[in-house]
Length: 97
Image (cartoon, rainbow, N blue to C red; front, side):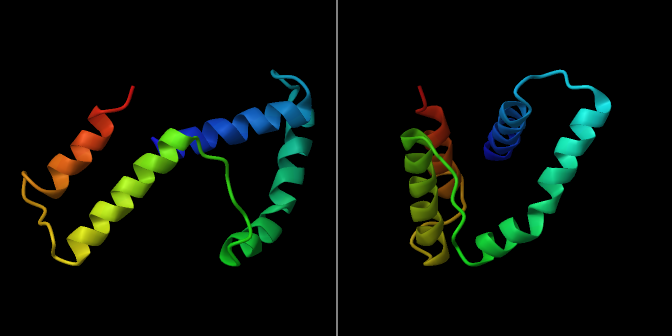
């Protein structure tokens, strides 16, 4: 789900940069080329922990719960059996409004 949101966010950002949707092919190609030129800089920023992304409070909370559960699993405090890790993860996604 997160990857889909990331792609949708990138697509919306691209539309904002273009100032419209349904671009002509060569205009879109130029815009994509400019985006591609930024990749080395963005990759460096990601590796240095300097590039962040916006997340809603709900998504941050969900990720926090998942990381906490994963830590419990790796510390052998819970197992992967149906009543433990998988059920807890299911509750996170089942409780969304």
